[in-house]
Structures are given as C-alpha cells and as structure tokens.
Image: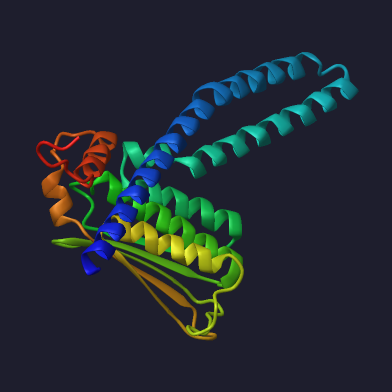
Length: 257
C-alpha cells in the first residue's frame, strides 16, 4: 500500500512537471508572437500617426484628434508590453533570474505605489537551472500579487540568495498579516498552494510566517547542487529544462512496451 501511494505521488509529480513545462513553453511562444508581430505593427502605426499629426498642425481640430489617437495607441503599446512581460519576460531567458526579478519588482512597485527593496547575491557568475529560475520567478510573482491584493503593506523587502547547495527567496511585507490558523482570504489560499506546488516540483519548500498586524513573510528554499550536476554546462535554458523534465520521466524496463 505504501509503495502504491508513493508510485501514485510520483506519477502526479511527473504529470505536474509536464504540465508546467508545457505552460511555460506556450507562454514563451505567445509572448514572442505578441512582441514580434503585434508589437512591431503597433510601433509602425504610432510612427505613422505622429507623421500625419505633424502634417496637420494647421488644422487644430484634426491635430487634436490625431494627438488623442496617438496617445491611445501608445497606451495600447504599453499594455501589450506589460502583457508580454507578464506572460514570459524575455530577461528571464536572456539575462537570468536576478535581472528578470529586478525588472518585475520595479514595475510592480511603480504600478502599486509600494516601495520595494530587492537584494540579490551569489548569482553574478553562474545562472541557476532554468526550471529553478522559472519556479522562483513565478513564486515571487504570485507572492507580490498577494501583497498587492490583500496585505495593505507600505513596504516590501525581497531577498534572493544563492548558497553552496541551495537558493533561497524571501518576500516580506509590513502589512496586516493574518492568523496562521485562519483560512487565507479570497484567492490568496490558491496562490499559496500554487507557490508550494511550484517549489515542490523542483524539490523545494515554501514556508509562510504571519501574525495579525505583523505582516507576512514567504520563505522559499530550493536545492540546486544535484540539478546543476545533471544539466550540461553549455545547454540552452529551454534544453536544460527539457532535459530535467526527461530525467524525471519513469524509465521503461528492458523488454517492456
């Protein structure tokens, strides 16, 4: 019975890994298509509007309408850029977790008007495995989303540190906190469950510390030594993630179909 339970848990974990990997690949594809096609078309449209507006300076009514249309197009371009970033920031693939998280934290702080202090260490020379980078980025994204929706915080601190055999992420706010024994408000409970699932898929854990009027802290710890040893040094991020996924697949026994 115990072995059967372990097998079922292993199958569930492998299935979740495949689903998460497929989701991230689809997010990457959609983000790239939005940026390369719709984004470029919007840029061309804005440039043409600007040229047409300048030609109509002697017609105040037409000029004002074109100026309004140009402003709307620029806002749409900004919204598309934000959507692309939300789907799959290019910095996560191109520059790594620290750069992507820095950009996201800056956008988040500006959008919600909440001061945020980000500190990273140990990530200057070598990148983490792609699956770990993705998990940590999504966990931070969800944690900050919960802060904005539920915490009433006036300050947030984010600490990302790489150690010898693990990486840790801490997101701490000074908001209203909650009773640890009470159900999480609204969709926050689902968000916390999602963070734990994300961490578990890469062998990590998420711990929540909170108390009424004492804020909330999310601790994430993910081991890295074994994953880094499994991933070839020269592999591309997408290939490393695929290799990590493949290594998690159950091996067929010799002679089986």
